[in-house]
Image (cartoon, rainbow, N blue to C red; front, top):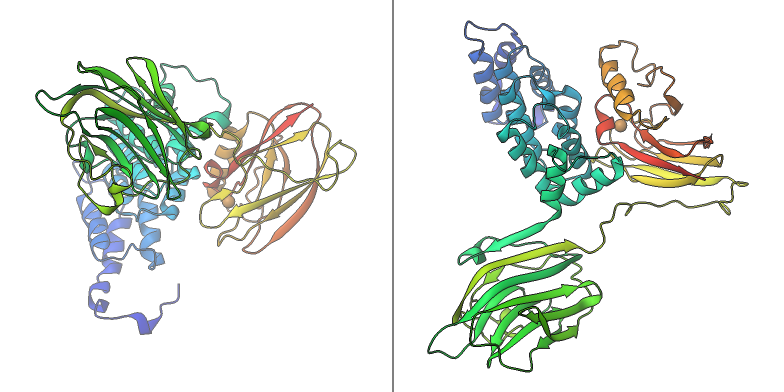
Length: 483
Ligand SMILES: [Cu+2]
């Protein structure tokens, strides 16, 4: 890599230590206690010097190699010092560190996965990792996977759906799916400072047992989020229960006709698909109204519970409502995805009627910097003629293969193994195996390739993927063949 001299500044002196550090890192010797402490220290020193921001290719490469050091502690340090970006995501996939035989190292890798920016590619990796033997039995590994799945909630769930695998409820994967599909926030005093649940596209259900304070007029905020333009609030005013939903600056309000009971009562306040606002007390519907729909975007600010500060934004939800003069028990906010969008990216355009007689055009694009294709799933007819147009606007090389149903892992593994094949690049990183039905060449940045493909006669989910080593875990999708 060419070094631009003009950018070398006061750190020049520090940087002179780098070659010595790199030498320490590349020393693969295991010391007496199996730690190779000098390599570990060198990795952290490099990181402390800021040499691992990706600009120093030699330093980065040394850390990448350390990912496959024979010493577990070195592999662990290597994954910990790499910057938390998409490039690292890709490296994790290709290095196999997520299946590291040393559980401490594997733990560091899974925690890194949870620390990386959320993406479909990461979600898929988390999903695949959840099947790994050993993760299930280890409490800490499964907790780390849960954190990672939670951060990538939506994409994790669609990865599970798209894989079409049967998953046992009691398996780790099954438990992760069930845990992240329920988005439930248990609320108690103090919850208002931290939580800011993302309600975009989700039904909102708030449940609690509410009790009036003695010797006091019953009023105050139970729960609220957002502001006068977009927000909601559940509150008691003049003895009545109110649910206000503000959307695009307009206010929609469900108010009970009768005063709320003097004795503790159960409240259920909901905003459902179509903008239906419902209030239930002790299981009986007591008020309803209609807003525009579900919230389209995340709401500003954090959740307020059992009180609120007076501010201009809050005024349009409730008139400067003060702390709740009362108490709540078992309060929870549950968010439900209105439409689990398994095939949100299902899309295909036709050149003509897709009756099988004319070719159908399938456009697939590599998503820049994300290590993904822009389609997860498209549906075609058995025997139909297709014209593919594959475009690579990304900074890296990619290819695309169409393979036989159920062979993604096998072909993916073969692709990773090509790292050890000196001829791999000449072979366009296409493994020679009968599972591969079609393969493109490696596309450079800006390349577009068009090819014809006749859909097999057998129905099923045919994976498509990029076999540049490591890419396939994120860069794959399904061509669904139907009759
Ligand atoms: Cu690729």
